[in-house]
Image (cartoon, rainbow, N blue to C red; front, top):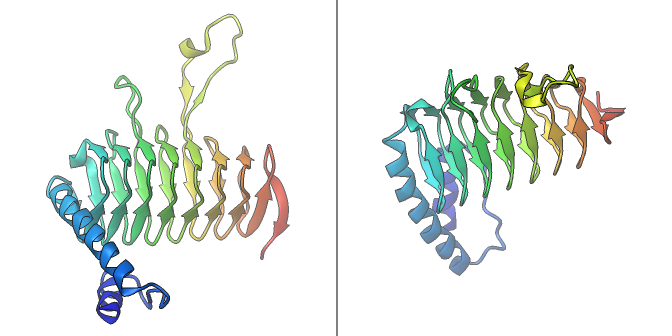
Length: 231
């Protein structure tokens, strides 16, 4: 059974994937039953999407709205209680071999007077538990990106220049957020509007990113500063 599962996973796009040999046959059987239920839920989701070219594993109690604006590549894994509100000008595009884990919220639009721009997630990207991705300006997450738990992305800033006017009446600025290929975003990091996180960079746990992160840099702190260059 182990050999068969390895082949199936590799066929789904996980090249050279091997199940840990210490997992018992009983544990594998339990996992297989769970995945079967997720696959059935995923099939029901798949037929309601704008486009889907592969298999979807959908956890329990997910809330996916405006499904006709979502396009998905090969193999999408959605953990339990994932919420995706895809209402936006350009929709949500998710690449191949993407996992979005438990309790993650993707919110493309807050108020219908001003829709969010849209979200793009590249191939082989993993978003850990409890992420919050606010899509007002365009958000682009590249290939081979990994998020630790509870990462937050904000692609909108409230204007506040006039202290005599309530902030909510002064409008918003939407520059968007880009996270380039190969970046690692550590647990509880916060990325603010207008930021580009460079290719193969690392954002340390708990960092608040207020300036662009150079390619190959390691940044940390509040506000985040360059601690080291990897390349």
